[in-house]
Image (cartoon, rainbow, N blue to C red; front, side, top):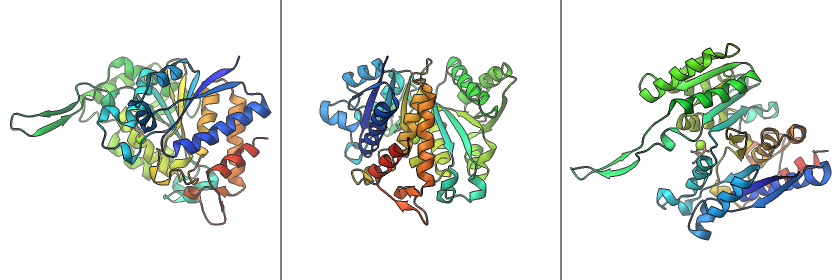
Length: 358
Ligand code: IPM
Ligand code: MG
């Protein structure tokens, strides 16, 4: 039976990079027997322009009905002055929370071919292969109350709420432990337990769950130290598990260790491994429409989708091998270009990966 993929290109470079992902999926259908149905819809700023909502009901129901969602990116300068509830980012956050996608997996893998593209010394980053597990539907991103109020003295006061219930911590702990069990069996939980009660509880719950998993070595780190350790000695980490906001910040740092944020895919999963797959970079409005964006993170997101949600591990391997072949051949988009490489555009990079599938 063919599986249904909701394809949501979104804004900015999302449109170009998702076009390459669609090209890849069509090639897998045509030449390798993959059975999927693709249906596109609007999300983010383009959806707001079209219908006044960054997450139209029709897009949400398509995403709910699909077996997996492929997303490009949302956001752009022209929507920055909208009220928060109408901003493109609300489309993305709405999808995450409406679909219950609480587990965000963000691998940071350095391809040996790109060691010189990192801003860190090659000996610090070469061989890097870590996984950040970010809690995605709780914490300060969603906590109530939130807003801006007027104090008695007339000045404005902004406020947000950092809140986690035990069950939210337990379920993300289980995801992290299960992933570590398939890797190097080490989990580092990142919190700010020395200052924030909420994350002090986070740590307590992690420890309780960790006791049930003797196969996993669980350690804890404060977030300020974790951010330092990521650039000091990133290879000490196997799996890092953390809150929504800390994970947002630390995963950008981890991404840059690998040379380019344009290389990294992500998966956001619900309790049944239904997922939304997206590159971890944003919509990059400054380079949108120029055919220079790196489509590899999106193509690798397709591989994650095939592996985690569509039960097509062999197809996923095929994509990942193709990407390695293309990097070996010296082809690079501008963001990862180095001496002796051939710089190509978005479409040519997509074509090269499709050609390398065989
Ligand atoms: C991310 C992004 C989003 C986030 C934005 C676009 C809402 O930065 O996926 O990391 O903060 O989660
Ligand atoms: Mg982010």
